[in-house]
Amino acid sequence: QVQVVESGGGLVLAGGSLRLSCEVSGGTFNFWSASWYRQAPGKERELVASIQLPRFTKYADSVKGRFTISRVSAGNTVYLQMNGLKPDDTGVYYCNQRDTNWIDYWGQGTQVTVSS
Image (cartoon, rainbow, N blue to C red; front, side, top):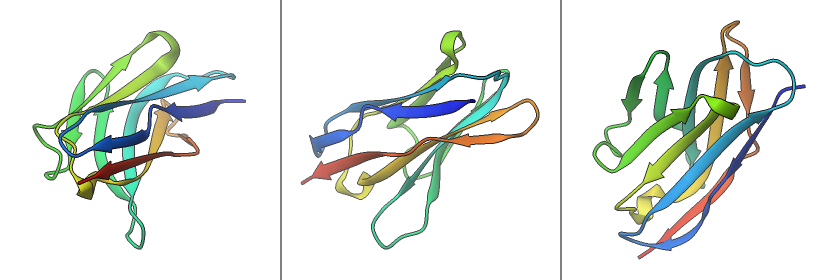
C-alpha cells in the first residue's frame, strides 16, 4: 500500500528557512506529479507549489522567489525549500503525490509556524 509521509516542519522566526520532505513508500508508484498545499487556521487549503514530469514547476504568487520545489527520483522524494519565511506562511503543509494513473496520495501534514 502506497504511503506518503511529510517531515521537516517546525517553528522558525520570520526570515528563516525550512525544508519540507515528502517521501513515498510501499506499493507500486510511478510518479507523475507532486504538490504542496497549506492550510492556515480558518482558511481553505491552498496550492503552494507543484512539480510535474519532466520538470514543470508552478508556484503560488505569494511564495514565488522564496520557495523552491524539487524532486529526487530515487525514493520518489519531493522537497519544498522555504526561504524568507513570513508569519503568513504559517499553516499545516500537506504533500500530494499523483501517479501515472492519476491516483492521488496524501500525507498527514506537517505543521509550519513562523513567528514574528
